[in-house]
Image (tube, rainbow, N blue to C red):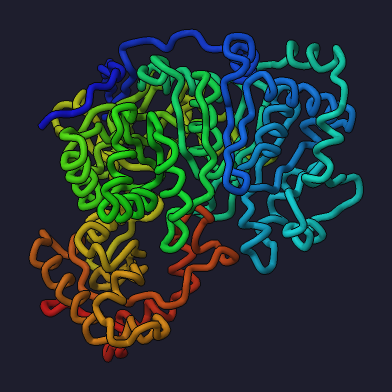
Length: 603
């Protein structure tokens, strides 16, 4: 089967074993030189390609551009304004905004001036009811200046107001942009310490309360060089991205914005979201702009495949010759989605595109491990990228992943206890992820993701359940009716699940009830029968109690952001869901299960 030609890096590893059973891996190729700050690349491209657009966004029915030269001019002016206001590590800038031009300029200005900033998830202000998570973030940060994009943030802003904290919004930006930069700005930029914090990124909270991860200037610059050496085609021509991923997360704000800036590329802001009914703006943008590389989370690929399958013109535009590579991260991609994507590509352009993934985190800026080659296994995450050292520590029949390198955080902001617990005696960061070898006796063939260590549990029989691997199999097997699942069974006799349904797919099973509330859909015999049949066939393939799910409840009430059940990018906090919905878990295992419990035929 023919793949589109694309220049990819060589990650052949050096592998060492020690007497404890640990395995250490690193790329044989050393990491090349990188700038002390990513803002040095803004200076570079403003000089080399001043008129090339860095950022493009839609205003009404036209695209508006911010060139590299204009970006640098704005950044210098706003950097001066931040210095004038005394913004510092003790009084950082907090940005409450979605992805837009003001957000980008403020963030780069803070980095240019060597002062600290933190992009904060808009969901903590706009989707929350009690602003509890926002209050936690504000306590950790103690911001001296908060940029809140518009009036929608007013209630949230009033909930965190404190003496000494200034606020601005989009209406104040013209005044900041008119600030005349002085020599103070360039002296501040020249004095940047690569190991000083550039920004604080708060973890998504998928394993608990968000933590403030220190991102240094060195981390951001080094990681972009790692990405370039792993995906060297990015340097062959200026990359063009069409991207929605939020900048308060490392995938969007570090990885994708960084790729555009580091390589002199252009980022088109995508207003769409990978949710039913909200993906059409993404379709419109992909019709009008052909990306050279496409990044998304698995849920985004779910929606993309649906759109491509029903719109041949869109598929032809998307798979145009200039698209070189597809990349997903943040969760496992369902195999049926990857297969459908390949099928559409072959039908459209006669060749497949390499589908790349890896493993990283907010603490690793984010790329640490990558698979820049095609694999039949969606769980195959690849090998360490140049500059990263991986230590694999035995944990039963799998390995815990620990990493070290210039892209790794020095710790958590104002949280010394969390920082101390996050590193081992050799200075490796404990990622909390588990892996296996793709080929058991040959680590050089790469690693398979095997879940989060903190999610695994034992059944009452003492049998360990690997939640990550089991969940991935569930999502693949129960597609298209189930989007995700929370695995249950801690100290129980068997494994069950609280399933997050794909409401659109479930409704198609019972068209006669029209737009009835989803609770009626979930209770419909056709839906219950479809899930019960999948439970039966899933159990038939199981190799033991830890790989079989014999009962399920379809969740009708959405997961709660306020209660930390779900993050704003859709990641599930399994522990929070199990704690908040303990009564439903009890229902799953009741001696006489209620009608909302679906049980497989051979349970």
